[in-house]
Length: 136
Image (cartoon, rainbow, N blue to C red; front, side, top):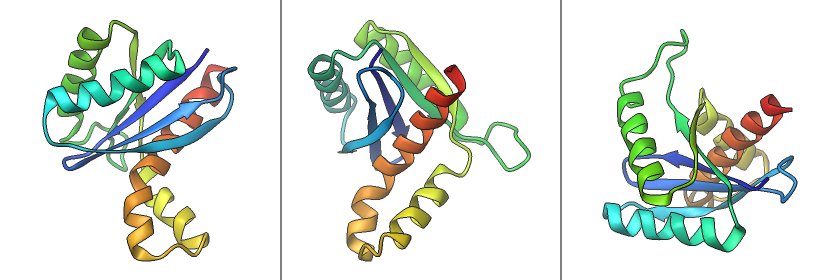
């Protein structure tokens, strides 16, 4: 089963896609967040292209495990996305994924500019890989 992960940010949305068997996640790019129709079209394009059966949206949490302020926005985004796409949309913990993504990119010795462009997609891949591992 192919799964697409979405890391929702205020300006950018990171995407990651699973392998066809649903075991390995990889970054799939970043969408500049300009309008809802533009975001939905870009995500719908990936859902069709990869024959995605499920979408996972990152749910922000605080260090103590409670939902962060942005969690309500992520929940709304997930509901709207499910209505627009017609595929199941789950929420998955995104605790510290952006921090970990930055660490991975620094370790890969990417320039600051390249890290900024890749960070959200790598964070989405981390969200997705955790989701896939928990499903097994």
